[in-house]
Length: 308
Image (cartoon, rainbow, N blue to C red; front, side, top):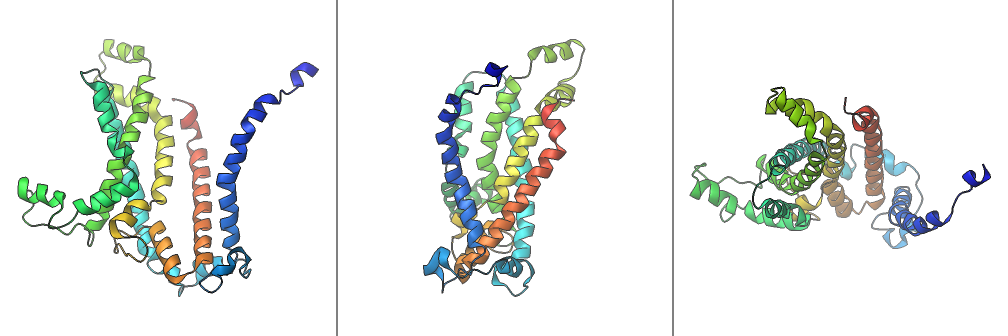
């Protein structure tokens, strides 16, 4: 019994550097950001940084309940856009990734080359994606209008993609374009782990391909879908790079339909030098996402551990 209870410390010593690095990389900025949210950190106290005057929860009160707070300007539009953007991008990336994975799960000549080429959008950094698509959406010289108007003649006139409600789709489409390849790769790996004998038995019983997908493929992929959908929601709520590069970071305003929470927070914090209040908003967002993850994992715990 003593031998069984004795713990070998050597494996834990091997893990210790990685654990310390994770704490340094993740926990330290979180603690520092929370402390900044308790300080009166603005253009007058920025030189003091962490020695700025302590105001406690005043920053939280102002960002949550002060209607005249400049950080709250445009917050309603940003919340609406972020919710619609997150839902649209997450579901679209999951659906397209799964559809392409089903196609790539078949044997055909050049399969490995095709799989590599399909991953190219995901390899491109998000900053580059925002810059490239910003040029592609240009009204007069952008390739999108050239294809739709001049080549295919689907539109009679060139729309302004970066203005008005069109700007919402101008940020959604590039995000989906970059996100679905990694979904495809994950679903492809999951599909290849499904036992082939289940499909063979269903085929012998005369079950159609569509019913096989509904009653075999989808139930077995449910744990992967639940986890990946959660990751997609988290990533898209914090989206920043594509919007900031397409419309300009800093004081650049993307318009009523393209402004998201993170670009709004960054722009307003740096425009008005309200860094303490900006840190408070960031910490509130983090806590809301922690609650979301907890509720999501609890709600779908059964789906992630069983195939019923």
